[in-house]
Length: 334
Figure 1 (cartoon, one colour):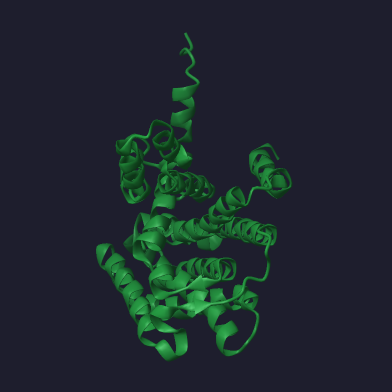
Figure 2 (cartoon, rainbow, N blue to C red):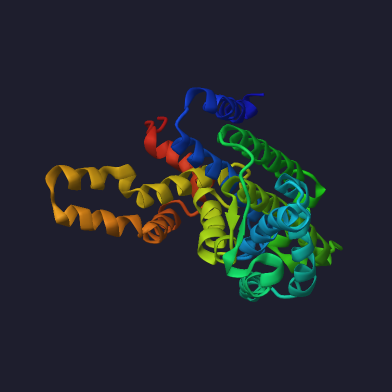
């Protein structure tokens, strides 16, 4: 019970957050945070536990988003049904890819996932009659308030974390880790490594596709460059995992919070601090700095990842004992 106390407290805080905070801006940030918990947890399963580094999250995210959008555009069905179908659409994309490309290892598999992103992005852009091409898909949001979206995102995040935690502590999870540690040794023990890599990919693709469907419903607009974006989706998913802690259950939650905060910190010019100082002082230099900073979130990501790799190579959660000992120093026992 003591082991689950902190997660239960965090869940209680998240559940009551909309009751305490009414500001739409912070609600928006929390919805993005919860969405990235889902995506980061999915990436962590395939890369952190199974050892198959993937840049293909954008392909699965976009598949889920388009599944929801196309239901509304072509069948005039509520895009919310995409939450049920978007995950399976992503799995339908991921399984044929995995069946072919899991015969490759290491950097070759990672490069193949990059190619999958580009194939999906260009396919969505070319098929104008079906997907709308670069014009994209626009739907009317179901709710004016952000609270329903928040609780849907919270439910998704909780379901993703619990299901993945259950999987990694069940028999498939041990097989995933054995593949990560030594695939040849796992095969010599009779483990069907191709099957379990496919299973890991299917679960990861499913949750990423569900997150894409939520994005379609929440934002109300998608186009190929938005939902199949390498740096905004795939790279962000990897950074969430690395910063939080690869191969840890709660690492993606911590990584999502850090990365969403850093992204917004740069996008808003340190939450409007530089803009405020520029207006108060009338300094053109400060205004120029503010404009530069708002477009430099990728630089901020890079600096953060370098610092984490050098200081906390196992991520914040993975190296939490090191952080705790550094912050709460105790004298060695004599």
